[in-house]
Length: 141
Image (cartoon, rainbow, N blue to C red; front, side, top):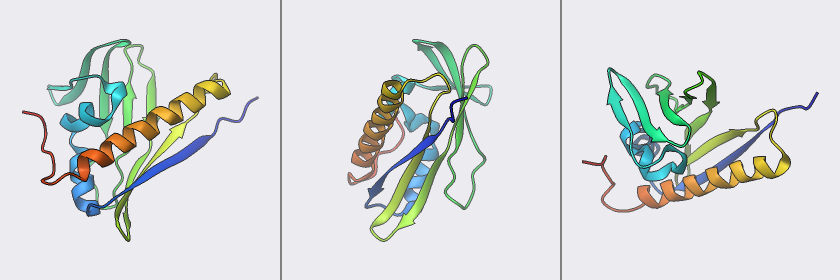
C-alpha cells in the first residue's frame, strides 16, 4: 500500500497576520487567488458554492472563525467526495506566512502530485501579490 503524504508550501507576505486571515477567510475573495475555484463564487442559503466548473457545482466550507489563523476548508464535489485542505496563517517577523498543506491523492502519480503542488504555489504567489498592494483589495463588488 502506498503511503499518501503531504507537502507544505508557503509564502511570506509583508502584511499583519490578522489582516491576511480576514481577507483569505472571506470566500468572496477565493476567485481572485485560487485558480481552481473558477471566476465566481456565490452564497446560497448560507452555503458557498462555485457554479459551473469543469466538475460541476462544488461547495467550499471553511472551519469556524478562530484566533489561531486556521483556515482549513473542505471542497465538496458533486459526487459527495470531500477534499480536506489544511491552510494556516501564522505570524512571521516580516508580517505573516500562509501555509497550505497539499495532500497527495491516493492514486496520484508523482507527476500529478507535482502539478498539484505547482498549482498551489502559483495560487499562493497570486495571493501574496493581492495582499501586498496598498490599499488592501476588498471583496469583489
